[in-house]
Amino acid sequence: MNERYAQMGEHLLAGRAEELKRAVEEAIEAGALPEQILGEAVMPAMEALGDRFSRGEAYLPELLLAAHTMQAAMKALGPAKDGGGGRQGKMLIGTVEGDIHDLGKNLVKMMFEGAGFAVVDAGINVAAEKFREAYEREKPDLLGLSSLLTTTMVEMEKVIRKVRGEHPDARIIVGGAPINQDFADKVGADGYAPDAPSAVKVGKTILGL
Image 1 (cartoon, helix red, strand yellow):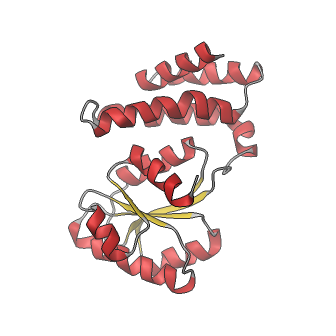
Image 2: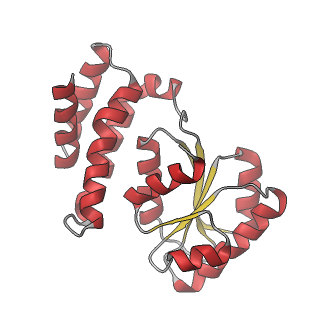
C-alpha cells in the first residue's frame, strides 16, 4: 500500500486528476480508510510541495495545480470521507470587508479540507458583523481571516473584536500579502501564516493538534 500512496502523491503533484481519482477509488476498494489516504498520500505530498514553495523552489502555478488536483481525491473519497469529515475540527474562513480577492482564501480552504477539517467558506467582502453571525451559527474551532489589500487590513481587527466580544476563547488565524507576524500580534490573532501550506501547520498548532 505504501507504493500505492507514493504513486498517489506523484499523480497529485503532476496534476493527473483522473489517475489520482482512480488510484483513490482502488485504494478504498482494497480496504484503505479515508484518513490513511489523506494522511499518508495526499497531505505528505502537499506538505512537501509547500516546503518547496516556502523555500522558493516551487511556484504558485504548481501549488494551484496540486490544490485543484487534490479536489479529485476529495471527491473520490465521497461518502467515506464525509463520514469522517471534520475529524480534525471545523474552520470558518473568509475575506474581510472591502476585499474581493479569494485565491489565497480558496487555497487555504482546500489545504484545510485535505488535512481533514470541515471548512465553511463565508466568502469575500465579509463584514465584521457577518463574521460574528457566521461564527455564532457554525461554532468553528478556528476562524481564518484573509486580506490582500493594505487598505482592508484594519478590518481584521474589527472582526476579531466583534467575534471575541461574545466568544473570548475564539481561535483566530490571519493571512494575506500585506500581513505579517507583528500585525497579527497587534490585532490579537492567535497565529499568522505567510502562505496556504503553512496555514495548516499554524492552525493545528493553535488548536493543539
